[in-house]
Image 1 (cartoon, rainbow over the protein chains, first blue to last red):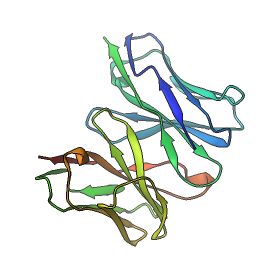
Image 2: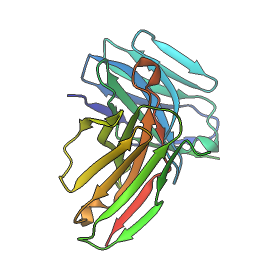
Image 3: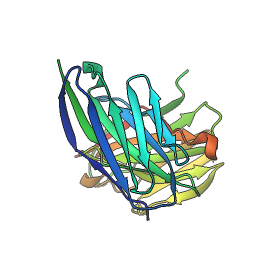
Length: 112
Length: 114
């Protein structure tokens, strides 16, 4: 079945530095890899996603990289700002079916 | 004009009681979900409905019963509440198919069982 491991569970960075979160998965049939951001007391919201036919995608200060051979994908946040402080979740979805399986989450704290 | 709305936002109740959470989406999506987020923030899918048909039913106690009267609504009824049911329950919706993987979450219902 689907399984996704997310590391680290907490990440503290200085404002302006970069943050990297990594997820590894076991099911090679996974073909969709989104990242969700959940601010304190709020709902999770999609910030970026990537499909299995793409190796990298960027959107301003955030980027996602995918290594299908090694079965891992990562979220990169550059020039971090205090408003980037949140819990970030990776997720995977198999080609068939609509079920998204989430990683355990990474609590990111950006210190001013 | 909230896209996915769920009520109530907070629910405090005693063990053994029965309670319901309601969810409605106005996005025209055909698939709706219930997720449970525990105190460690882990998000786990419970149920999914597509056009009123149950398509995902994870290992959830029988005390939890979802109901979808139409594709815009998905309610969750919980019988005989237990302490371990305390969590935040998120409703979500999406369009089935490759173009519709993005999940739109409701604002959550914080359930506290005393």
